[in-house]
Amino acid sequence: VAHISEKKFIWTKRLGAPVISMCLAAAMAQNVTPFIRSACWDFALPASLVLSLIGTWQYKMNNNSNFVRVGIAFGFGTIASILGSAFTCFCLSGIGTDNEALATGAAAICASYIGGTANFFAVANALDTPISLTTALATADIVVMAAYFTLLGLVGNTSRSEGVQISQIKMPRIIPSLICICLASIIVFFSSLLHTAGARTALLALFAALVGRFVTNNIRLASAPLAAIALLYFYAGLGSCVTPAIFAKSGPQALVLASIALIGHLLFLAFPILLWRYFSFRRARQVLHKNKNRQMIPSLIETLVASNACIGGPSTAAAFAIASGRSDLAVSAVLWGTIGYALATSLGITIYPSFRFITSLLGGTSSSSSIF
Image 1 (spheres, rainbow, N blue to C red):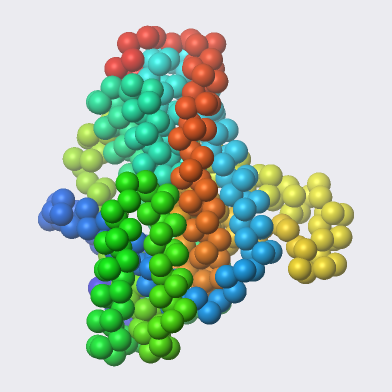
Image 2 (cartoon, rainbow, N blue to C red):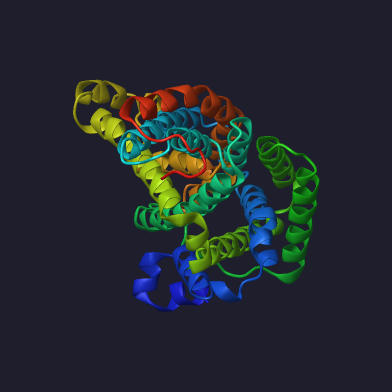
């Protein structure tokens, strides 16, 4: 339905098929089973990454300038996630909040916004977070992430400068499609045997790149529309998570915490890059622009890919890069997102005492069972 809507109507084409898919699924969320939601995360998203990399292996995988620019934006994004979580502690402390719960929740959300959901649970477990608080924050994280992906899809669809719309992709032949599905299923299955999220993503990217190097052009051409379909399925599954029951389960306190942390991430990420690009470093920028190969200022789409690598992880970042017409950024998204997975848990645990200090300094209670 999202594919047809994007193709037939002008206003839906501006929204983009991923946003339409998410909104339609949210409207029918009550009829979506947990199995379908689980399949979106466990199969559709990694399969989309595999199929995308199989079809785009011919892009420059060793484009150092892209890798460095995405890395610079990812570094800003990591700092922005820490500052955003600290900003959350500052905003919510002293208004009847629980010091311990607020600091713990901020540390877990900080880890999630640097690496991914796996880091969230790792930090929450390391800090002995109560089950009720962990559940509420994890649910709020999903809801806020769905809103974030919707916004990112709108911006990415507007800023698309190359590549094709999903509606412009022609469906491939049956036999190459079946081969692509089998290859993606095998790669996803073997990578799922690893218990570490970062290792799974790295293995997915490695196998997909190797397969893409040796398959025929017909299979590569078939992988692009299949990757788009898998990505739409993932967005639909994410949209189906936004139900009234989910909102009630997370509670307004957890939603407020996750929302402020995300807004802080976006603000602290955008401000220094805009400042670098347009104001304080204008002279340095002119020097860098004399040699295009040494242009190190991240573009809008590179910044968004890096932000996606922080918030959603390498798989969603790579899928977003390809959906936005920048397939050459897919590998950079995977690599930096995997680095985020590796660092996020340690950073979340390390920064926790600072959050605890902020909350205790500004006041609060000490029940440690809920945020408020």
